[in-house]
Image: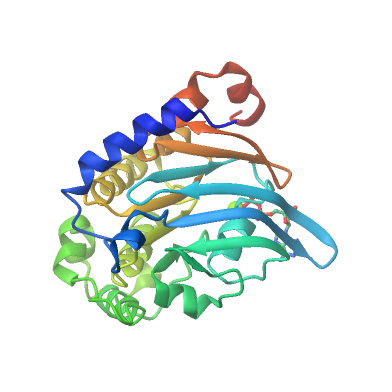
Length: 267
Ligand SMILES: Nc1ncnc2c1ncn2[C@@H]1O[C@H](COP(=O)(O)OP(=O)(O)O)[C@@H](O)[C@H]1O
Ligand SMILES: [Mg+2]
């Protein structure tokens, strides 16, 4: 499945990058600093008696960027919602920042520093851009909240529209706002569920630029995607799912170069 020399190479380049980290550093002892941000073992998610994620294993190292790829219905959203504590885990073990969070609630996960940008974005239509961002900062319990100036620097379009109501923004602007709101909580892991979903190609380019910048600032990312261009630009590793099961894991580069993987899962 995964390729040890690749992971080794990746870990080395990741260490080089750590000196430039400015976001998502978290806190804690040296051992906390080197523990993976997320360790998922045998994760199982079900709706009633229907199991939709089965025995899923993957790890996200600090500073890494991992994509979950797979067609509609593969179990990607169920996976990230279970990790964010929004739906229960039926089995398995999840460690976040070296702590067992298998039974943690959504508010506890937010407090611990996992921010999910949901597939549906879930903005309050009657909140202005700035009110939405300020509300996002309230999840930064125990950490310094993000700064509006940094979000506006990352997304100048939001700065121009700071008093506009969220419900009147374009789809791309709403996605930027949902990401900005998540960043205001100073997360140590940012999870994005199909950020490019429903967006025009021109806007996807802007979104890729912003996510690359977030990445460069050192934040650890987990991005669910069906858009290969975005996944390739953002992620160094990927987990490929279908029918609730992990089918392949390895470098993004190898996933794209692998014709069998491409044909089976990226159609
Ligand atoms: N609230 C729900 N109740 C019952 N089944 C659900 C619910 N949400 C998703 N499912 C089912 O779980 C499976 C995985 O869905 P989902 O996690 O949304 O996949 P993906 O995000 O990869 O498209 C699908 O078969 C879907 O129909
Ligand atoms: Mg989904």
